[in-house]
Length: 358
Length: 255
Image 1 (cartoon, chains in turn blue, yellow):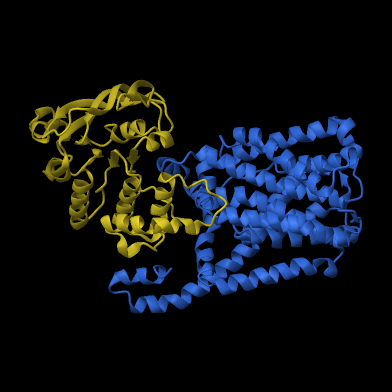
Image 2: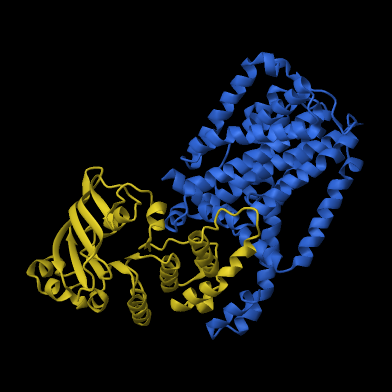
């Protein structure tokens, strides 16, 4: 029963993200302007702030988007994405350190490691729903943490693992400003993949599974296999983000596989808005920036502040930042439509006219 | 009027226990190919549980189910759906935020094996536009294609359930109270529709409205307290004293 209630609550919180997206799609101009603005902002970011922080924002944005594919679009709360982020971080660092792998190869290995790990973890986790899914993913992440902590010869245990200074085709990228531009295309490719998945036939099935899994089964879809597919895609993106994060820092530490990293990703998603993708980018900007600001100000209890903000958002703005903005926009669009609809309502077949155009 | 002599669904000794409550009790059921077979009985007779067993949503405690001689007893619902058994639900079971058109597209995409395509735009589904429009028109929803399901009237939701089942082009159609809660006009249209779509199919129908049963069913199975009470043609069943007793004060007035 409680699982059912949780999914209902989630559905209420989602509140028709799809409807708004449809409204936005009706105006492709708006979408392109937003996209161009976002790209411009992404390119300009290292000029506007401390470059390593700019790249952290990009990495956590992609990690949060990966979590959002499961949480916002499929209705599965993963509390263990640190496992994929962290495994990728160690893999990328080990590839560079031990095998002298060039950056693209290290990233590729990191992504593959995360994806491979996701197959067994996802296979077992998707058999559960609601809070049990969160618990299973958390349990696996804690196992990975344990392995990373114990396997000192490879991971360096509590000391972490130092990687080589990043370089690409002979160009030294140890300057974070340069590295940002080397890493950004990977992140953007990851975001583009997530966007493609969400707006594909597969994405339609994801949303349908989130809203009513048993009905999807009745339509002949193997729901477990679809959930596993989303899980692996999600972990792959988390791995891409984690691998790049470790390379950019030249360091992989236990922090990468610690549960707080999973929690931070979930927090970013909820803050930005579940089921919106772009909300994760906004959320990542705010959370990473805030943490940087607080640690710079010598404030020790960062969790106290971010945690309080999280509580306020969950209680007051359940749709998150992006979701609330979408909701306001949608309400305005609807309000401007209602009078027109009322005029033509008596014959109720007119409702079709609005939607049938495309 | 029996049109088929091949058995499509054969259930033997089906039992379903829920925590000590026996919802379905040693039910044998034979559904002949091409017939409309109605399951009737008072509330709590086990009709919907029997549907859930046949469509794989609930595993039986005992017994077996054959679909054209193939054992489907413990197959998951999606496998049974893929074998050509589509069902509708008694309690409206839709996707509140998807439009009527998107519902049908989802069903058609699954049937066409396109659901796992994650690398292409969902505009791909536009290729089902014609079939979608056809199905929506068939159930009288052509005017509501762009409406989200949670804004549809109750009768329209029932109609959409039917369109979804039809989209799977099933050989066996399991309809759980397709006319429940509909006005007289919608009931007539639904009966006409089922009369049309039954061609080339086998239909199993749970129905409370005896008029609908009289008009559609070739064969009627009466369930009571999870057991088969009587089985036969509508006329035989209607006149059976045990059925009259079981129904007394219930849908007796519907005749």
